[in-house]
Image (tube, rainbow, N blue to C red; front, side):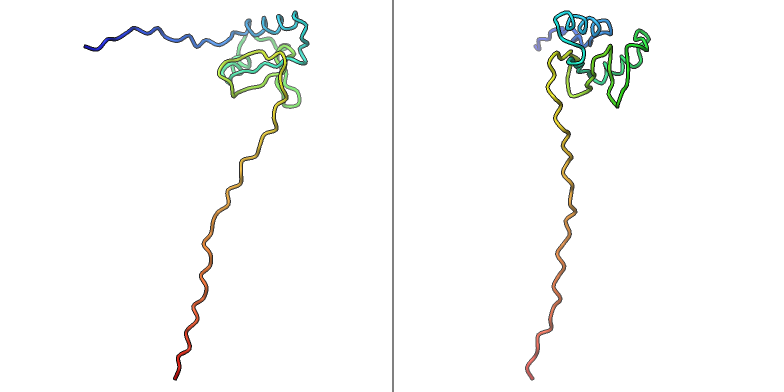
Length: 118
């Protein structure tokens, strides 16, 4: 007989808009300026900020291709859960993927007819 266990679903809820605001306020209360903070967001949470009716127009800005939420720089992707980074390290420069070189066959050498002795 096979035993089975009831597994409760995993809570995959990310932070809410209020959670993000509270984290920024707490970081600022701890003496960290908003210019040094970085919000590392998942793609889902970035989309939530952009589409939520709870976010005011004065809370989100896009300057020089950089998104900011409540004055904090936003970095999107490559993380499983959104976090507020109080001491972000500089982002490494993106490395271009290697260029694929199409290999071609070497040209065949022309065959020289052998001189026949008469």
